[in-house]
Image 1 (cartoon, rainbow, N blue to C red):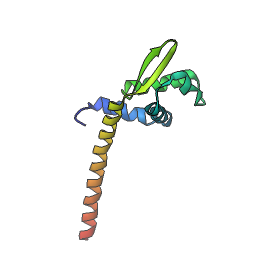
Image 2 (cartoon, helix red, strand yellow):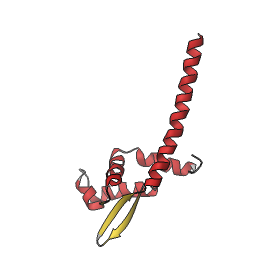
Image 3 (tube, helix red, strand yellow):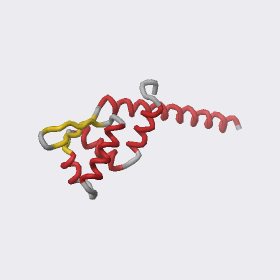
Image 4 (tube, rainbow, N blue to C red):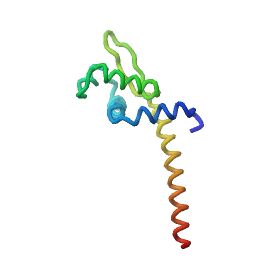
Length: 108
């Protein structure tokens, strides 16, 4: 987690806390998509999908660029890897704590 500030980690978790945003990240990891194409997949307005993309963009999980009249969304794979590294740190922390609890229970 040394590579990310506390504010960046907060933005990351905030962005991934929503199922639509997680789905958008998964879709654009597979292939870049326009905001319009993404909006067709959800039962919400185009503006709502744009807001979701903006949250992901602020968390640096995706990037947007213009192609003609379209806004193309792509995944930032380095940022996705950093997100995984943050989660890996927490996983190791909880595994260590669970092992400590197991050891305490084994003593009793």
